[in-house]
Image (cartoon, rainbow, N blue to C red; front, side):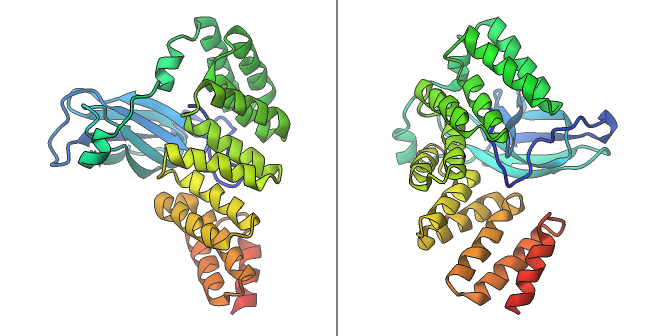
Length: 319
């Protein structure tokens, strides 16, 4: 489903990194009892900007991701073995150079009721099978330019891809994310709405639209979009984060607290910014002790954050 934009969290870098400073991930997917899987399993590497890489395991469940920018990521494993298993996610830190990061991911059986009630939907992969090769080439060019930090050329390539194939969901989503980065909010909302019209069950456009609407101070509409995103992926920390931010702006601090805590619980230190927003929420409610605890936890998780000095001042005021 393409990029997810985030103004507050780290994502895919915009600069080119020398190959000797890149990292890799080597891992395996196993059954709940630890035995090897018997067929190819889809493994997706995700950052806050969306999907970074996609591979399939071999017949023993092994996989490798190479030339990965050093950062914190989430690995998502989607097994379609008779729809028996839940989507599995695990945070992973890719180090600069050196040996690969090693990870083992265990599949988890769905509960009987959830498995029986699962509905078949049209996947993005199925939609992309219809995309003409010329449009795919423009999309690939756009991804290349985005990786180099060349937003102008990336946007132009995405527009060419859509001109060739107007129902190109991934291109509409990525164009919306790029326009959001450029501050072109109305145009971004139009592209993301187009992506949602193509596939209402696509998660990333719903999430990105929620972020656009927050930037436009349309908090009720943002929360509506984010609720739809959460109905698609209930355990997505990014959706909980922005739902929390929108709720706080709507003065629903009870839900805001719940969503921000969920974002941190599900996403770990990648989503430490949720602790910062929690601290500000508690300050608004006059809960100084809780605010102090949240700010201190934020700095423990993100000691080199750009706003560390300001948070230190807040901590000093609260002590």
